[in-house]
Length: 315
Image 1 (cartoon, rainbow, N blue to C red):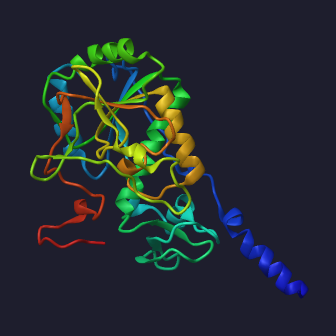
Image 2 (image 1 turned 180 degrees about the horizontal axis):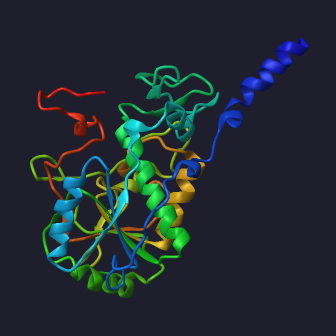
């Protein structure tokens, strides 16, 4: 083998290492933290909201304010405004010998356009098929919140997105946390969802019992995501679900999700990723307290906030 070929082979074999970056470099810092964003048994209450959607935060703040709950507005990462080099830095870089053959979405470094192809190019960044910039931004937003909460030393946080629907008095969540602590032990749960399941556009529950295949991760037991077991009159233990709009997260859960995502990078929407860490313990309430607004506006697949009066998008 010539000296040139040897160097080329060495370069290709180390492309993922040469171009890899720590995703936490792109986490967004919390600014203007203030007091008053807590409640009994919850150290801090975050609400993720795009700067371009002030009306959504105002509506949610009003709903919660009826019960004396004041969320802290976290300025969301806007994926539609991220430079393409950032998009490519936080996603999964393909390596030769990956064990799964999958279709994926990749973003062209030159023009920023997304296109779908079979994942097979060494060193190229891929996301799951159909992963839009908005979804990438929301994953980074959630991870930014978790990193902030972990760095601040919070034990328990409540993280919401700006499309919630209040079903019952949310102050009852304080008591539900106490009940779950007693039932399973304070150290034995990571996330408590404030509704039974997410809802579709028609308002009906949408059940998740599977996972999104990744090119760089295979769970030890794929069937583990089928667990859905009522464990008390108030709670159900689950292993997978859709919807990240209202989650009570313990410090142990923050660490498990952050460790997983820092190791394996971003690939799929957040609600198809947070349940992948091994041994993460997930519970839901059995009666909805705070849920999602079924037909809420979303900017994940398209930057809907840019729609002008003619119904067109200004990209």
